[in-house]
Image 1 (cartoon, one colour):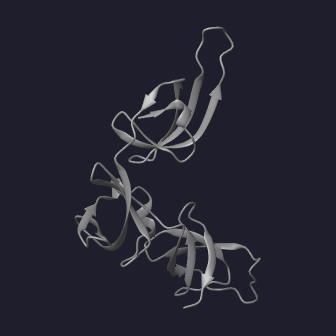
Image 2: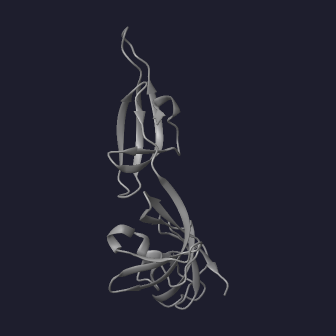
Amino acid sequence: MLTTSEFKRGVLVEIDGDPYLILDVAIQSPSARGASTMVKIKVRNLRTQQVFDKTYRGGDKLAEPNFEKRPVQFLYQDGTGFHFMDEDSFEQFPLSAEELGDAPDYLIDGLEGLEAMVFNEKVIGIELPPHVEMRVIECEPAIKGATAQARAKPATLETGKIVNVPEYLEPGQLIRVDTRDGRYVERVKD
């Protein structure tokens, strides 16, 4: 059990049967005699990714979740879902698009560097690496004389995700994309 004095950024707690990550902590000291200290935390539900605030009295306790991260590799997608392999045990498991949230936009066959979020021995989601390399499938033709500081144009990537890229990029080129905000980072030599 964790007391409110142990709450800090990055700590995992269990609230109403779900694992939560503490994003921010604010402590309010009492203004009246006999009042208790209030601890406000901003938390993210690791299953649903929803963010909200919770308030607790000083001395309240929350359970620590049975939570761990395991390295996994994305194998393929079919009609039943997205299939992954645990890199330690080599066990395979499927997840649905709903369980993955925005992750399918970045999943290409054989992608490594992923982590499965495991709560009570059940995989509840996938954590993507900060950047992935993807191929541009479709975009407007490159404009002659375009430089890196030129305007952006939309490009369709191999997963169907649309990203704004510099005008000098052409279909077939490999680029690095930031998985946190979905923006173009740089061109990759292949």
